[in-house]
Image (cartoon, rainbow, N blue to C red; front, side):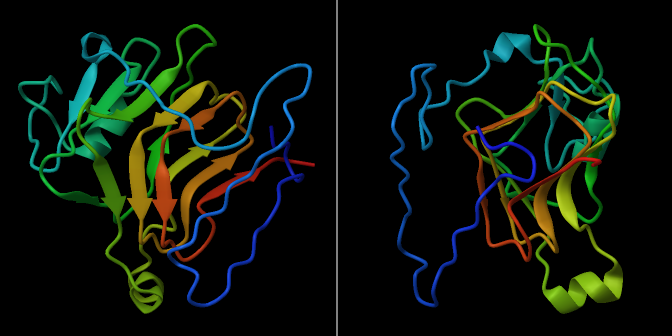
Length: 194
């Protein structure tokens, strides 16, 4: 568990791209470890919304998926599981995908790669392009006290102009099985009011 303002930074040296960091903490009496673990896919039958890069459907179904921005706008307690197809290339994110829905402990909002596929979100950006075109500073943003119980699972997020995932004043969220790398700022930023 990393509490707000109590995280840690790991500095890397030039040329260390091919090295991995492994954390091996003691397991406390309450249990738990830090590090990679398998993440089982959400069953496809639970999917309520489906998006794809070439999607243009309005029903947002598996057979007729929609665009990613449209699917994020439809997230709700009833439409709580969004599968992102990963078989058509990478989603080009030009403005943050903002989660404006809240889940519950037993009914979270789930944003996940389609089972067996890898959804990739990228800005195809350089720092200069980001500044000139006011491009997305984060791929996914969760902002606000009322937005909680949001699970982001099994996505790859890269080359964003700022952060991979930005969370502000939101609690009880999970990020599982994601690869967040090569962004111009932190992979995940979590902020709260003091």
